[in-house]
Length: 351
Length: 177
Image (cartoon, rainbow over all chains, first blue to last red; front, top):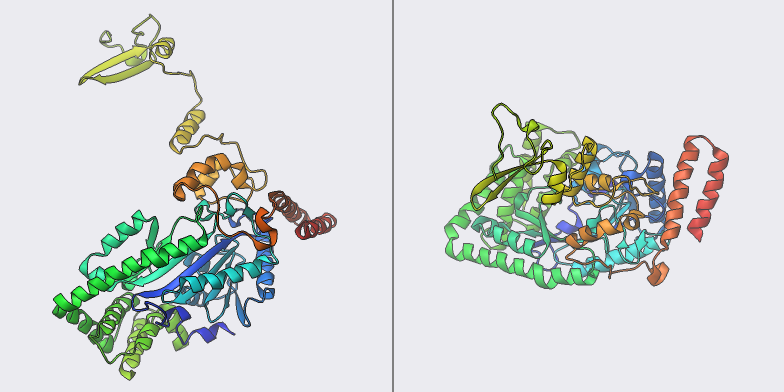
């Protein structure tokens, strides 16, 4: 498997299938782990950082995590490849921008990725489309066990898995569910969700995690408490309490739009289709917003002649690094915006 | 109480309200909407107002105390982890700890912080590494490994390959044990 094999299709998490996929884009679980006997990365010498990367890489490659596994040396990888991995949610923005020995292992059709030398020595991630938290947990805990069978984790009987940042200590788990909430955004009720999430000690972030804006009406909801609860409790809260509530809100808002504000809804959706099918220059922010409205229109039956699979792919393939990879050359400014508009037109007219 | 002072005399040369020494402590109190000023010498201030006044406190100590009070630190600035060298102040600045051993070194200071971050919880109840059963990985061995690896890095840097080879053996042994 090569990195270039990933480019032409959407990741598993954007397949647009899985339970509740009209509203739940993806379910993600990440585990923060550190290797015993090494300082955390902020206090590592260059040599220790390299030793860590080598040790982690060897362990991962020999752990028989999957039949096929791709390891990318991020220190050597060109910027565009790192950007591509960020767009596919396989590495974080800080991991792409960092310096020094670091890498990422990708397996199981991109449902598993393991970042080496991010904020912690290892950040294991399971990413699946729709609401599939239990499946993601089952998958990730097995990968964690396999790595742990040959590697000593920094672990303390009282504090659990020790992490560089004390806000992750204990289980080291972060459960994130990415939601598409265009109706709550349009009706202005999204603020209520933010307030409720805050009361439940949950964080709300944008499309690309920490410190990013909620572009295209995508919101990531994640836990903040990692100590004093079991992984199963945290996951169960999400699956049975938090997420169903938000889904219900969004469905209610969508129904209200369709029944009471039909003209306004059709106007939004119609404009989105119109611009996407006729624009000659388009930026990625605007693309995300219009695709978001189109996606809502499709799920509410206001648009019929667009394939949901194509639409889901466009969310990813119109991003800067993907677009440049597809075109096979570096694109900037208006040339890039023109290439994006051309690509969207070709995909939306063909379906 | 109204301080008496003759015109032209600055606050620096005021006499203490109680005795005849120079007043170095100047207080302004608002009581029932009335402004009350007090000028006292150090001794009277300490005795009457319960204000511990230490004379000639060095400016850096003064500043350090100020910063410590405002960041909720009780530990002396000098306390650092013997493994990674990080101090509590450095941790507070970056938000990231230096090594696993810090959880023991700074346990007392970390507790309130952990409880704030984790809904008042302070004990892990989740998954435990399977290979080590319920006891987890012994901290002591982790600490030894950190120290050995640090020494190895130093030996390599100093091109002391004989020592580096010995340390590598010790690390291998500790890892296997």
